[in-house]
Length: 83
Image (cartoon, rainbow, N blue to C red):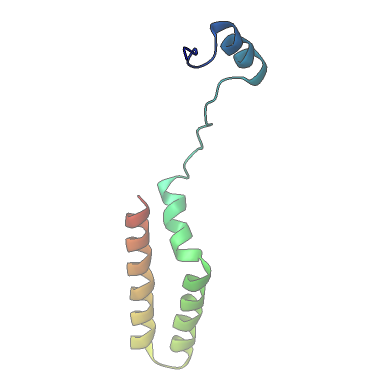
C-alpha cells in the first residue's frame, strides 16, 4: 500500500494556524544566589539552625559550630549538585 507519510502541507498549515507551534516554553532559572539561599532555608536546614541555637543556649559552642559546619557543607554540596 502506498500511503503518504505525515500531514499534507495544507493540513499542517491549518493545524499550525489553529493550534500554534509545538514548542515548550522556556522557564526562567532562579538566580544562583537565590538557589544558594534556598539551600540554607529549607525545612531540614531550619531544624539544624534551631539545633545549633539550642546547643549555644545549652553552653556547648563546639556542638553548635559543628552543626553550622554541617549546614554549610550540605548547602554547598546541594548547590553544586543542582548546578
